[in-house]
Image (cartoon, rainbow, N blue to C red; front, side, top):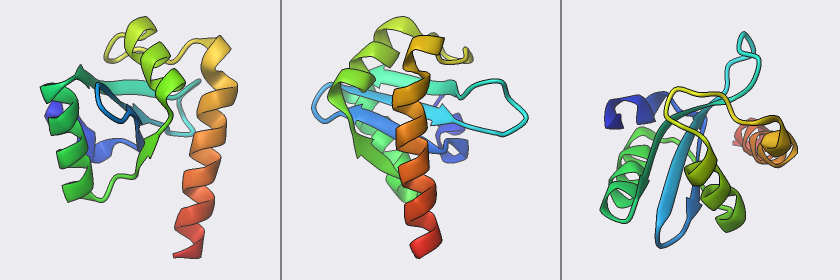
Length: 98
């Protein structure tokens, strides 16, 4: 699972407990969860992401929802599209400014 983190578009975190790696590709119907974890696994996901240059953003309610509702390899549910789209838009806007 950690090997998929460098291919993620963003890591969504609840800063102390959860980390969920999302990958978005325009060929997909929706972003998918490529890794997720709690506590020590969450810390490992964040570490690998930072080492790989993957953005890490704090969004506690979204991180908790993704962690609880979406299995690794699955697309995000429709009710989370708007929240994830906002985060991805933020990441892409920020990347263009760099």
